[in-house]
Image (tube, rainbow over all chains, first blue to last red; front, side, top):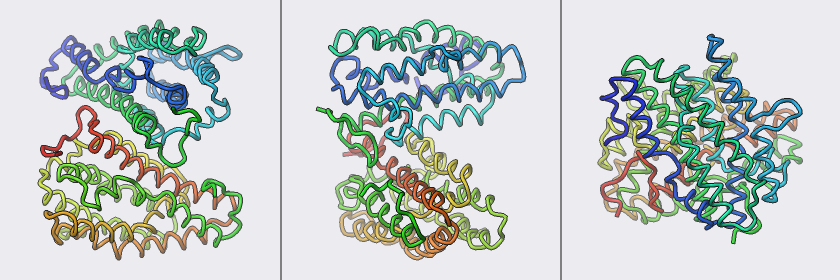
Length: 249
Length: 249
């Protein structure tokens, strides 16, 4: 099947089936970097590079979701969506997903100021994540919601990650994995709302096609980040100015 | 020297010296992909991938320059800058840089509709080039002009390319290289104007620092594109959905 063939998107069920096919074929659980990461094949320095770069994605998500909120005049959608921002930012004085990610980078031995500065990330990470934020800002409400649908496929990868980290690396502890455990319940709730939304609001074939293209775009955003990590830290082509682990080997 | 150390940008001369250092250290003439490309080490399929991806950069330049024009209320700057758009777009009925690039992709055996659709480019190419266009749209007029300063370093690479292509590949002819020959005279004229502009308009250290950061950003935009080509077409990790040459080997 050609995943970009959208000629058969005749109904909401056909749309959902295609979205699930796109996930099965294109989601980054297939990427070689994740197989190495979860399989215990990486050094601590390579995992530092992954966590450091991924921080830029994490800290951009609430900005992305603020753009989603700003697209909706419909208060009901905003009321459903706003918890995504607090999930990551936390309540005042409380802890959110970004704090949990920073605990992970702390445990991995990265300086917190350095992580938060995002100075050492790969330019490719910045360009890909910014592309995602801009896509959500610039496209239709339907496409903005649809681009979040990778959450449908996240629980499996989080489960693999938790199990793989604990089984295959002696420096991972349960405490370091709080971010991923939390996402096991957050992601499905969010994904189900977004899936219902696109089923109900993509009422024509061109709209269903736009939904599929938004999800394909998002899988590219995720894939590019792993390609860049693999190129820099597995194949050893760290671009000028980017983070260099002390202990790659 | 730390290229990002901007503590000594006390004058226009110091700024120009630093800009030239950034070029000497960070411009993509150092990239391994260019060494392979110019040295005759690539297959025709790998060169197709390069020309196909680079087309997205080429066709985005006039849009980028339209954003520059739109930033200036000063008519004199617009009068100086506008020829950059016609250099690439051509006059009505005439030929511009984009046509010359398409002649190159024609000669390389790529379908013109496919090239112009940009469907087969690497997502990393799209994200990097879009980041450049957005940078120019969203930043100050000074930073927008400064990000064009890679043109200062372009003539050397174009000369190496023309000589390398003709010497090292039997399928390159002089006619295919019209784009690069033309840039040998266009780029220095443009770069000299932009250099004079930043020398005269970056009157404080923070402004001179912003100029340097804009040029560093732009070198990242160029570097990322070659990293992505190397990863996909030299190391063989073509991401899902991207162009696959018939004849990589």
